[in-house]
Image (cartoon, rainbow, N blue to C red):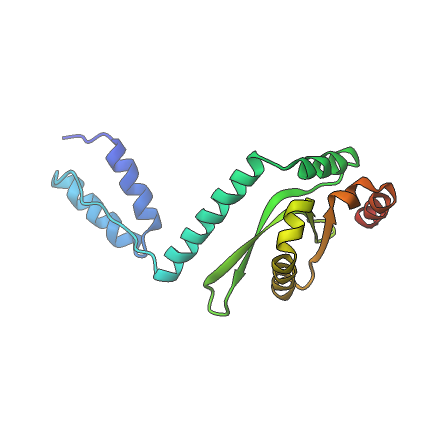
Amino acid sequence: MWYYPTLLHTQLILKISLAPNPILYLLLYVVCLRDSLLPLPKIQIKMSNKQAHNKEVRSKAESRANEMRTWPSPLEERMIAFLDRHYIQYEFQKIFYITADDGWITRYYIADFYIPDRRIIIEVDGKRYHDHHSQHDKQRTRNIQDHYPDVTVLRYTWKDLSDEDIMKVLLIRLKE
């Protein structure tokens, strides 16, 4: 009697390749196939609490960053136009994870713009936002610099982005 691969077989083979002891699972698969004991039981790989926690935090961070990427503020749009106009490569709403010594993600930081070539984070804040969150922003900047000491954080307001001299200095710093 011949058996043709089905979706169940394909899923099982993928799970076998990810299993901690793939040879044992492969033998089980062959014996079940030979004895036609199909469908086979699902084989699941359990994650540790830390892996599950970190996966959940990463999922929340990605969801939040995607939401922020979808609806950029007028100030962010202005910075995007500036960076694009000067051919500066950047990552918009880049996520930085802050982990404890044991590997648990304790929190995350979503930077408005990250310039990977210069390892610079650019934060742009409107007047309304900046007036209410300045102390919190200083703490976030300290946290990111503690965990990523080679990254520089630059903060700009609407007024700064309207000043041509400040923008020239920023361009020089990004191009150096």
